[in-house]
Image (cartoon, rainbow, N blue to C red; front, side, top):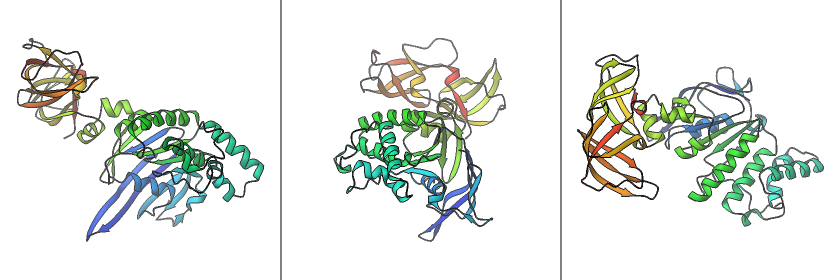
Length: 362
């Protein structure tokens, strides 16, 4: 079920200042996929999610779910939360500790006065789906964090919503359990023909779970794309930096040459992936990720994108070395293979593949 948001705004007043939680947001969330709202704390992603659910009343704009307008300031439309056909999984799970697993999951059906036989059948089917069959009579407080998360998911799914929304549901889990649950959640949602809207500030979570990511900042949608597009070919420096570690250097376009765009930067002259729309003199941000920097011992050769450097620091983290290399006027964050024989102070060549050198809007 598609969600269409048009001109949505929500302002708060705090300490005499007006805060734009949502600033004229226009967004189409496609049906039957996992759509993630990603951004730093305070960027507006949870306010947008709560507006879709009906827990927030925007100041202006319109929200339509499956073609039905559920909120419109101009048209005077407000469809209550319980009539929007949505499921919701909260950050704290909101599991009732005095209820069993069965009663927690059955609650949405009981409040709708669904016949008891149907309640039993649907709860059993849903618990089987989230791999909690046999836990029906277990007190909710006797479950692990990951199991409680699955109970919350089951409770959201049992009413068979067309859209399910998640507000940072994995943030309370430890790192290992978060990784395991993330894989389970991706598997569950991929098997369902519903729209999932997922809110997180965790870039790894967003990359691992999503079909589409919308990066937000200061109440606005900055960029939308697939995880691969956002990570490898971002258009804005904020997005490139937020989605993963990146070296961002100010640069000036010099020329278009042999299917590449040449720029001058603190590193030197760098050949980048072609951006034909840019012209000489344009100011841009040069972006390349540490994992795409190749370090070679000794002096560089005469080829494009090979620069002399010196290792300033290097830390072994198991699967790689991380550290800093000074090259030209730039201090670069680098990631190198764990078997690389380099030490602090060594002279190296910094080699960049033009296809991994992005030019972004300043």
